[in-house]
Image (cartoon, rainbow, N blue to C red; front, side, top):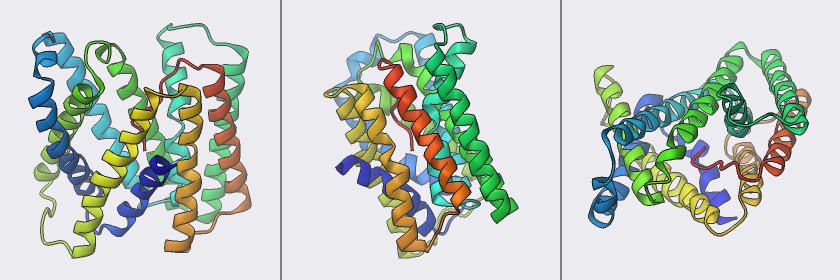
Length: 285
């Protein structure tokens, strides 16, 4: 529960921070990397010495997809509601299943296909509800889906590398790479990087310490101690908790169609997780 609460604050910190989404992503990954990377280099350097050039390439690619995930998801919150953004970005298990099917990794089951159909239906319902509310909201929904696809590619690319690296080593490599990508983008785009208010600085730090390290750190710890199905289902508490916080903090309400779509999406993800207990779903918003 502590992990759910911590990770659910991510969208709130994004809303409170008055900065460009790319800058928010850069600081979230940058602050987290400043803590994790030095620890990994000091305590896990032997693991890095055993990696091949191909392994490092895979790690860099994973970090790139992680950067794309945060950039698109954080941007989506500027356009749509927290509820829609969180539910759609948490469809990562569905995209992992679809991508693995496309790559020929395992045969799709009837339950899997039914869950995918449910998720598509739910996404369409959310999009329809948001279209009636605002055209900008649909853009946000699309960006949240891009974020879900990006984090799915991050998970899939890192699957083999995780067999060679421990969680800390792998996380440090991916976070560090993603931070470099986002900071390069922020500087290259000439975005404002300083001069923020105290609220914005506090939010940027909160994204890294509370949502990223404590929140996702708790999920990753739980994956080593509990059944992955249980952890995956608990992940669905994030859009619920995030929606509640958004209601009280930002007065965000949800239409009946959008609510129904969110319920269908979460049910499809829960069923998919239960039907494929070996599917790891970690490091998502």
